[in-house]
Image (tube, rainbow, N blue to C red; front, side):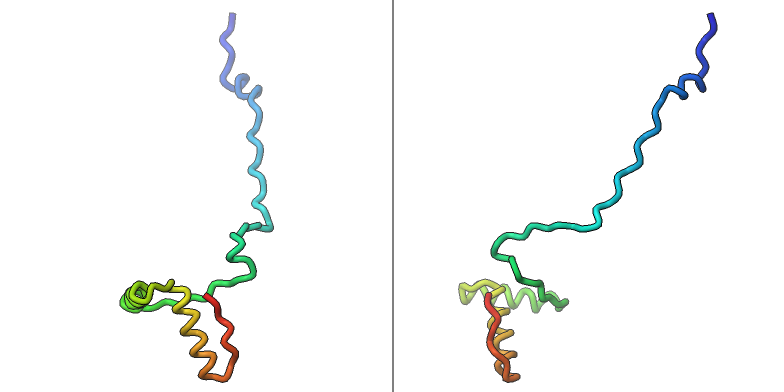
Length: 86
């Protein structure tokens, strides 16, 4: 009786399936509060972020509402409508 060869054993194996292609369209589900909204951001020094957090805590407001207030002041200064909500 002959011993089966390694090559003969490999012939019975199936080739692995190629990976499925990456999805072309990414669907992200946002919470209702973020529907129809976009991110506006910037890079600032750490003390700016810390000062904003302290101011928000002192006034018992969110940082978002303070940023909306600041944007509305900017809009007002330049004759635009105060449309930012936070």
